[in-house]
Length: 194
Image (cartoon, one colour):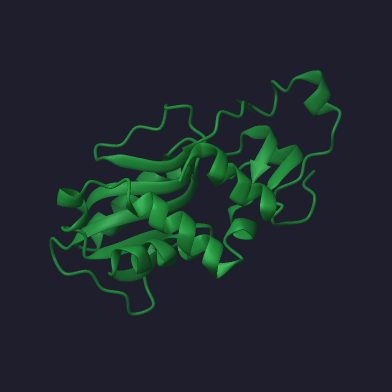
């Protein structure tokens, strides 16, 4: 799948938003890819996951026996990636502020895992999810994301595969360009933020 084909999937789902957005990292942006919208259509989600799975080298792909993703945003992306790889899907969540594996999900000691995200901006939550997976006994051997918004700055000690890299500037809340500062901020998927 080419970059233009991936972007067309997002456009067709009305998932490429324009405005003033508060990202999960706390940074601000004028554009937002709403992966939840692009994943609403199971066929579209399947196509995107299959295209991303094809980017993972076969020698690495055959080692993966589970896909674990962070809740909430990564759950559907992780499930579709697990389907594309033919392995189990699980997720970590933050019931008390830090990621943990719950709901009866179990990883065997040393089980080889792909950690799957929907979007990576700074990589902080991805690293936190990887830590939780490893604390639960898994060995994260690769990471994947539908979208890499980090501008190549998110670093991991494992191979990282993204379906598309999207260079959209992100700003600290106190360093907004005037045109962005003039628009009320919105946290995607929630009510307008103050």
